[in-house]
Length: 268
Image (tube, rainbow, N blue to C red; front, top):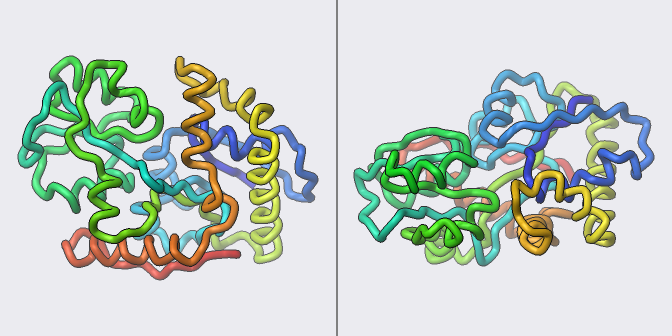
């Protein structure tokens, strides 16, 4: 079974016990690691058995994948932000985005409307803003908590936009499993996923030791802060309000003519 996730501290944290075979299973699991937009695009080819996926991308993939009730990345009080060297108007601005299928980009479209998108890898965006290559940058992952270290200013907080509109937590990413896999193996993988998340949450320091491999220069304290922002109660078991939040996101996007609301098929 080919399982794909991102080279980010939160994914490393939640997958640690699975990767190191601390969770016994009959499944033969092989891991591959790529940034989230690369995984989104790989999922369109249907080659991955299990993958981290942007909630946005799932709108186009509900015929190929089911959502796992464990493994979701949810912002609650925080989320993607737009930064610039100084406060600017974002309408018609040149904004670096971490991929057109990321949920952050969908939220930016909902919040701003017209802007000139420049796609690049998420970890290149801060430098592009600092150099003046773009007017502003849409930050995901640890950039949300490190941008001030680079002398940048927050122009738009997409969590605040979302919460003002919905009063719900912000669903950003999910883990999905290919429909071609047997129901028995789907349920077994979900069990292993949940056990791996539980192990991390019960053995935080041990899992953070592993996640430091993907620290990208961050201190241990910041890696721990970031991992625990996105691996939380919602990650272990998706509650009804997260399902409601995903439905709301798709409804808002459909009203804007961005996408067609998919059918949510959640394995729990």
